[in-house]
Image (cartoon, rainbow, N blue to C red; front, top):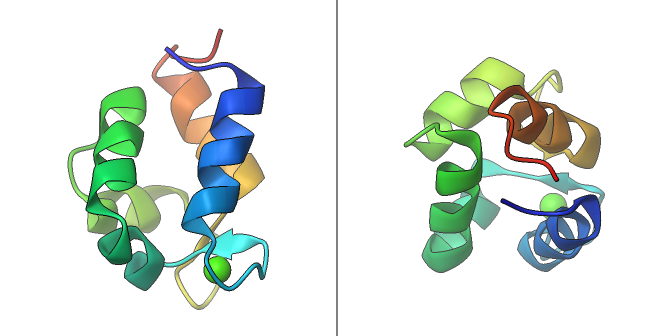
Amino acid sequence: MATEQELQSLFDTLDGDKDGKVSLNELFLSPGLSAIISSETGISSSQALLGQYASNEDGSITFDELKQAVEKANNLT
Ligand SMILES: [Ca+2]
């Protein structure tokens, strides 16, 4: 379970190039943080997470989209 604030700080850490989106590459670069995302969303692979929630053409996920995924898993406190 995470708070929105914790999720935001996790997102900011993952977003290495600070473009406001987390790409598949950025998820691969931080396997430990990706594992936390997996446990919060219940989606085991980064590809599946991005495939399901990313609306950007480049396949990266915004904070709002990540939040949606966590909310859907009822893991946002
Ligand atoms: Ca990024």
